Image 1: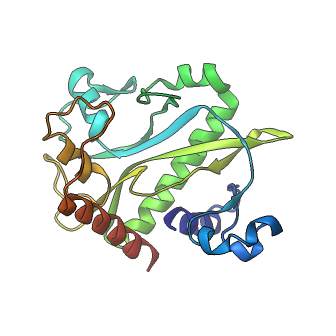
Image 2 (image 1 turned 90 degrees about the horizontal axis):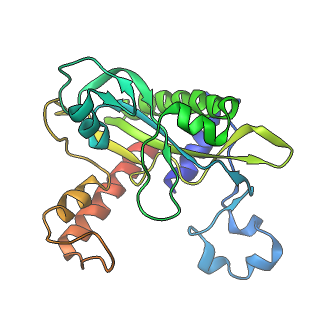
Length: 240
């Protein structure tokens, strides 16, 4: 529901934006699918099929997560030098575009703009960068009005047949799964921030003696309930 909201909201701010969402109303799906409407309602969408651009388009507005670890080691994030003395979770002077690999298995890995451009083409990646930064800034301003800091986020793009140089926003976008959402009230750099996203669950998993390979650990009911509540609050704040 949250990406569906953003797909409706963002084009009003960015008329040039193209995205893959066609329809959310099951009654408007192709006829063979309508008989399954009760099962599909709220769980399926109709989208344009694209060729996925194999790069994760990450935008960072604050220094946190893997970017913070990279900065502590090298003074850089994805090869981009940053000023010395930044504190954990500090707001960056300008948002950074830090692409990463789109791994078929395992974890995505940060790569430089040049390495990503060699993979998908400099012109296409340049358009993805411009769009990603625009979308981040528009979404961050909107979220701030509702008491949420958008610390960072990840976008994915594809291209349609006949338009190989025009990126289309695909997948989910600006959700707690692909973004770090922090409550604006009480924000202070120099420490971890409370969050509305899956970082809460990650932090719990880091307390376990688990080697991060399947099968995953069974989650306590309170961790499940708290994770769900954080996602629900993010949705309620952003869509009100």
